[in-house]
Length: 625
Image (cartoon, rainbow, N blue to C red; front, side, top):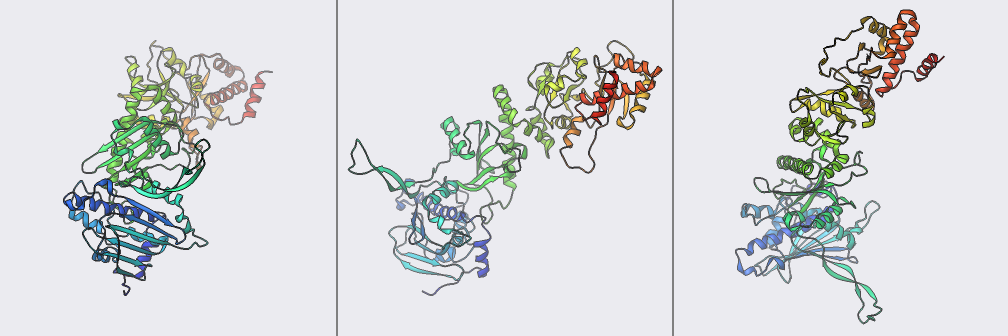
């Protein structure tokens, strides 16, 4: 029979489809198997109204056969098959799709779940094949046909014999080159792994000869001998775990699925299931890992959930399904309603994906809230791993929209409870008349607890939140308030405690002026402290940009480093400050020495670097003479 030319625009179009549309060559097997599954779906659908089909769902299968000597891979199905016209229209016209036409004719029936819609998936096989033969016989027809092509030079359609209805796609694999090892696709284990990766949840059994260890026939039962025998085995799982009701799945099954999915030895800390039917139908199975991955805080860590459409994996890590702050979540999402692009690798439109992602985010946050309420110890372990990520959700893009949910999940160390506490718990314990929620930031709870500024609040039994995460202060400043109580740093700004004893502080204007003149630009201001009790001095930054923020931004390469104001607060009732004031009357040089030492001590307490450590030690030594 004379060779026919493809009805597409040109040879260049086919070349583009083979070499440019698909990211990975291994996708070809997924596409051919998906086409076989679609063909079976069509015959299954037909059997609902045609008793002559005479086949039950359990009778259908897809079979993979490898002939290494002939360099062929054959994918066989017993689906609906094609006649001559359909071969011409579906395989002779690039980008025509029998599945798309079938779906249009079938309407929106729930019994139809066809993924192939573009008619180019078949041609992905040319990425690894130099020729393809399709032997097919349509249900209800007497004649079978063979379609053959070596690529863009055209194709032939001839009559042939086939025992039953269905289709065989025979791919002749290309010879290896220096750059490409096409022969790897003739390896049974390679094909096995590709089926498990992309087509594990195709609803029909995918069978292939696999080596199985069996006892040799006639061997001694007491000392049996074994041999490897090729046996036709079903490779795929068929029914995804996420398609089953949660009540029907054991914790062990969920754990095993997660461990294989995430390549993790530990069990997940949380299992979250989602099933939604409506304008967009989808199911999701998500996990919160029980420990933080080693590369979690590196650029190498990839977020995202596996994305499936009708049981076929479309993307291994779809990052659009999770906001960055929930990147620790692992799992899968499966929806038949996705608008796939021509290669089934990305989405044509992201409307559906955005709706799904927003709903998944709400579901995860609701589950974490329940986790916190039902298992406090477990939640604290979760927070140790991912509390920083929860806080990031508040300050990152879109944080305002999720603030109400996230603020209930935050936890900080409590000065009075000596353990992690939530904002709700703090607010419930606040005494009547307390105007602010107090906090202090530092490297550790012990370091913060030793700050001079904590003494006054401790005396009044006011609870202070100790922020030890590097971004915790940004989180509270972003929230601004909780339960109508503003957040207030005990280190910076007015504590709004009021003067309970009616005492009016002497501002010591002459002494403060002297200290400012002595220290010059090193400080913005010197003033009498209203928060110190037993310590002589402390450093505050005023309101806004704090010392902890300054330390945080030092991690970034900035042309103009951000620096907090330095306000030296002095306890004028402390002997050291009183000694400085006395020395100012008789020995100005000694008073200047006092002022400089107090300044350096305040820097040390605040965890700030000294301007000149050597000079500071010399000043201390000078006093020791």
